[in-house]
Length: 315
Ligand code: GH3
Ligand code: MG
Ligand code: MG
Ligand code: MG
Image 1: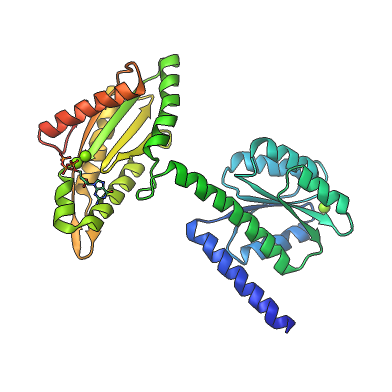
Image 2 (image 1 turned 90 degrees about the vertical axis):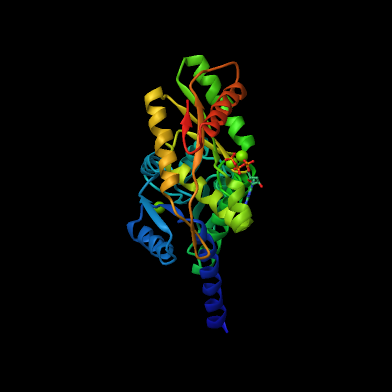
């Protein structure tokens, strides 16, 4: 019976891990001064294809966290030289809120006071050594799932469901900050509006699903075509907006042309068809009275690009 139940447990763990992996790879940092125990933890985690980093004390762990922003979960021992688990957890929580990083503290058996202190210092959970493998997996997975859930909720409030780009509300919220900084520090800022050409034809000829597919594909090409620092959003239906910082006229023209030609060159597969579309773009570098005024100006340029024959940009 015991064997059966533990096999069932491992199956359950595999299902949970698969669910997490669907989204992306999960990164775990293991912190323990005992090399052999660390190796054991790493093996358990890697068995389920979790990506694992290691540190042998708190100080080393903090260094890794500074250089690698992608860690989802830290599992830390308490008793370590240089910097112990409590100090590490305290330091980590200065920079990484519970909504972004899960921390599990490891404590020795019979030290309930320590477990409480780990939690009080900011750990989400603790595991008492020695532990059952099933318990270890369950706690690890539950903590990762919680982080993923918070991320999903946050994403759904700022991202557009179809394209996963930022929605209009988030674009303006964050855009206002970029705009204010550009005004204050006299930095260059470009506002771009773009719209898919004759998009109604796609819907009318191939149906709404094909239309959705096209919008998604265009969004993904745009996302690949802008820098990490640029702000790209879905403005509405088949219209997108971009804010680019620290850019001059020549560079802006280059980027707009690159986006235009990338979309023109793409064949979008839908059923047995290979669809192609073009976009028109309008942009301005003038820091007018407000972000909305800049967008309006870019929109006026977009209108001229449409009037001029589409599949082009106007600055
Ligand atoms: P133009 O070159 O002048 O932009 O022509 P157009 O046909 O693209 O004109 P318009 O911008 O007026 O049409 C946009 C159409 O996009 C109208 C609307 O039905 C469709 N649309 C808006 N949002 C979505 C969406 O999420 N999915 C799909 N499939 N269609 C959408
Ligand atoms: Mg130790
Ligand atoms: Mg439109
Ligand atoms: Mg259009």
